[in-house]
Amino acid sequence: DTAVSQTPKYLVTQMGNDKSIKCEQNLGHDTMYWYKQDSKKFLKIMFSYNNKELIINETVPNRFSPKSPDKAHLNLHINSLELGDSAVYFCASSQTADYGYTFGSGTRLTVV
Amino acid sequence: AQSVAQPEDQVNVAEGNPLTVKCTYSVSGNPYLFWYVQYPNRGLQFLLKYITGDNLVKGSYGFEAEFNKSQTSFHLKKPSALVSDSALYFCAVRGDYTGGFKTIFGAGTRLFVKA
Image (cartoon, rainbow over all chains, first blue to last red; front, side):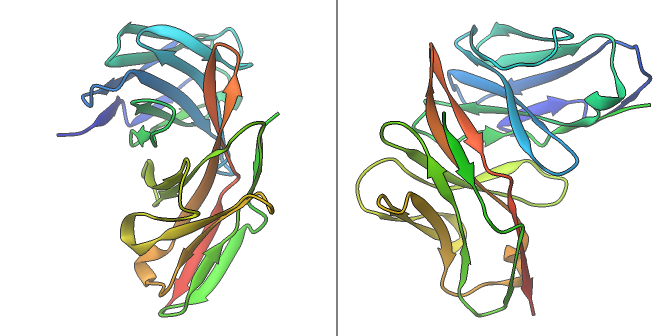
C-alpha cells in the first residue's frame, strides 16, 4: 500500500498546455505539501495545506494553483506551461511539523 | 529568515570507513532539524530528526546525527559506510512562518561510497 502516491509519474507536454498532477496520501496526515526539485536537485516548497486550508503559498507564478478537496488529496494544476516549469514535482505529507515528511515518488514534468 | 547550508557538494568515503555529511543552520527560536536521503529516481526518505532532548539522535539504516547548538550544526554520521549508502542526502530545518510553518531543505550532498 503506497503511503503517498502521485500521478502521473512522467508528464511530457507542449508549451502553453494546461496539466494537473494528483496526489493522495493514506496515512491520515493533516498536512500536505508540494515541492519542486530542479535539475540541480534543489528542493523548493511551493504550497502547503493543513486540513484542506492553504497555509503556505510561496512565491510561485499564478499559473500554479493547488486544490485540496479533502485532507487526503492535494492536486496541482498548472496553466500555460513554460519551458522553465520542467522539473520533478514532489508531494509530501506529515502529521505535524514535528514529524518528518513522507514523500511521494515524484512527477517528472518535461515541457517541450 | 531560516536557512540551511550543506557545505560539501560531494563526499567520498571507502566502504567500512566512518562517514560524516555536514549541515549548518540558521533559525529563530528552537530548531527542528531533519535528515533525508534520496536514491536515484525516487522520492526523499526520512532518516532522523532532532526536536529536543539528547544531542545525539539515531535514525534509520544505522545513521545518527549530532546536534550542536553552539556551532549551529547537525552533522549526519555513520560509523561504517556501505556501498548501498551512496545517495543524495538532504538536511532540513523547520522554521516559523506566519500562519503556519515550512521546512527548508539544504542543497544536498552526494555521498559516494567506494568498495
